[in-house]
Length: 214
Image (tube, rainbow, N blue to C red):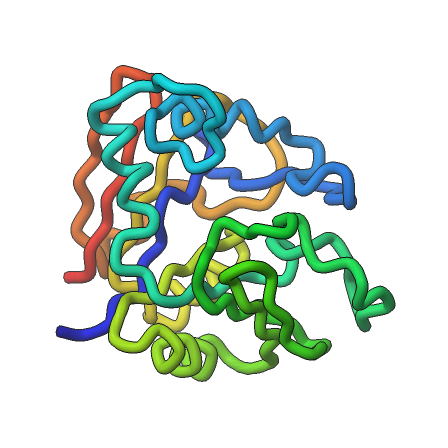
C-alpha cells in the first residue's frame, strides 16, 4: 500500500485559526491560550501527557489514539520546533519538546537554515531545506513503509495542500473564536474540490473534520 501523508489531530478555532500572533519562547501559540483549543484531547483517556488515571472514552479518545497509528516519520515547520527566526544562534537549545519528545520517529523540520541532526530519547530531528515534495520523499524513506504525519503548523499544512501532497486530514474545530492569528482556512469548503469530507460532532463540543483525497 502507498505511504500516506496524514494530518492528524490538528486543531483550529471556529474561525480557522491554528495559532496566535507574536510567538515567543514562553508562548509557543502566541497570544492564543492553547487550552482553549486542546481541551477536548487533554480530557481523553489516551492523552499521552496524562499523569492521572481516568479520562473520557468515545470518539475523542479514539482520534487521540489514532495520532500515532502506523506513523513512521513526522514533518513540521520550523515554528513548531521553536520561536527562533533566521540563522541558528543557540544549538544547545533543542526545541519545545523536552528530553523525551512525543514523536518517537524521525522528525523533519523545514527551515532555510540547516543545523546538525540530533537525537533526544527515541526521536531524531533533521533540519531540511527543500520544497514540500522533496521533504516528503525524505520522510517516506525514513518511515520505512509506514505513513508520514504532517504535524503543522497551519502555514506548513497550507504549503503541502497547495502542492497537492496531503492524502488524509483530521482537523478538530474547537468551539472558540479567536479573531486573529495563523489561519488554516477561511472555510473547510475550500478543500472540497480535492477532498471528500465527513463532519462529525462530538459531545465535547469539538467538531471533527475528516478529509480524504478524491
